Length: 291
Image 1 (cartoon, rainbow, N blue to C red):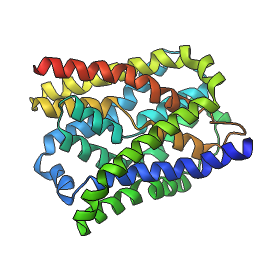
Image 2 (image 1 turned 30 degrees about the vertical axis):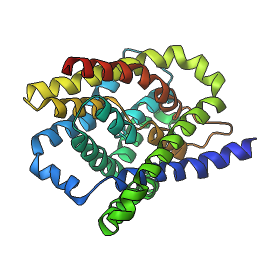
Image 3 (image 1 turned 60 degrees about the vertical axis):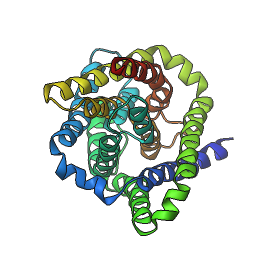
Image 4 (image 1 turned 180 degrees about the horizontal axis):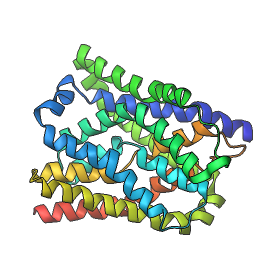
C-alpha cells in the first residue's frame, strides 16, 4: 500500500499538475501576457494582492489560531500558491474579467517558481525552527519549473504554432484537467481521511476565514483603485482562490511521508474542499448583484 501511495505522490501527482498547467497554457495567447503592459493597473493590483497581501493575511491568522508548526507551514505554502484553472472558471461564472484572471494565473504561476521555494524555506525555519526539514531551494525551484513553467510554455507555444489543433483539443484538455484536480483532492483526502477529520475543526475555520477575507480584500482593492467591476471580481477570485493542487505537490516535494500525504500538504487538501463552500456563495452574490 505504501509503495502504491508513494508512486501516486511521486509520479501521478506531479504529472497531473503538469497536465493541469498545460491546459492553462493552451488557453493562453502571447497577447494575454501583453495585457500586463496594456492594463498595468489592474494586473499589478491583482499581483500585489495575491503575492503580498495574501501571505501577510495568512501569517496574521496563523498567530490567532493555534496550529501545529507543520500545519502552519502548510497554510503558508497554500498562501504562496497562485490561482489555477479553477479560479479562471469561477471568475467566468461570477461574471468577472476572464482575460485578467487568466493573465494573473499565468504570470504569477511563472513567478512562483522563484518566490515559492524561497518563502517556503523561510516559513519552515520560522514556524519549525531547528526541527524544520532541510529544504533545498534550488532543487525545489527546478522541480516547480519542470511541472509548472514548462507545461504552460508548451501550451502557449502549441496554441501559437497550431491554433486549429489547440482550439480543437482545448475543451477536452480542460475537462481532463478538472477531472484530475478532483481526483487529486479526493485521493489526498481518502488516503488521509482520519487525519483530515481530526484536523478539520482546526483547519476549517482558518481556511474558510482566509478565503472570505481575501475575496473581500480583492473586491476592496478593485473599488479603491476604481477598476471596472469585472476586473475587481477577477482580482478578488485570484486573490481568494488558490491552486490547492500545487500546494499539495509542493508539500509532497518537501517531505515524502511514509504513509499518505505529509502534514505540509494537508491544509491544501482540506482547502480543495472548503474553498467551494465560500466560492459558490460568492458566485451567486456576484451574479445577483449584477442583475
